[in-house]
Image 1: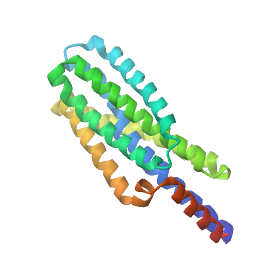
Image 2: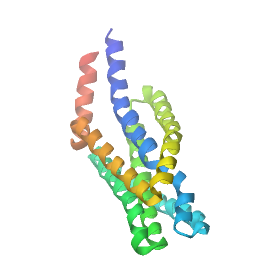
Image 3: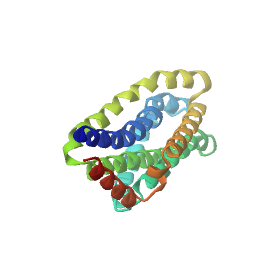
Image 4: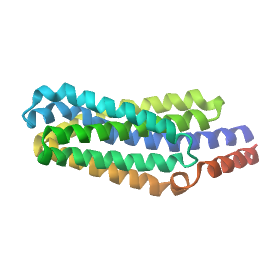
Length: 212
């Protein structure tokens, strides 16, 4: 009985981190890539599609290094929340900046999207690996990887939306949805998002000991 309670406690914490946060990335942020070919064509520069992917990748590399620095913080969930908001704002910028700056605006926004989204995922994976009990690490990471299979689910509706209202407006809608999802997740679990990670870990240790 005590072993069952201890297992349930660990699975609840893992589900909170990977099922909610990673699923938000897979469903609402990463599918922006499927709209880039049509978006490049709408700008009149379909030949820039490859460069757009490259710029997003460079931003992602920079974001990974930034996440490595943020991993030392004891408020990693809050940093992750801010990165999610940045990703949503960057998607909105991807829909607006090209209207003013042309392809240059698209490149700036794509670099920001790549940096914010990759830093978000890297920091999330760091929290999973560092703070998860080694006994449950394999099953937690397998669930985390499964969430990425949800990304294609949004490809069709986003493509239909882009055909209906245009790629720029579709990115604005996507960014707004991301902002709403991040705020909803943060408010649904305030202690995890806005509390210090050190305090949360201490409480988790106490709870696990009392359950044994």
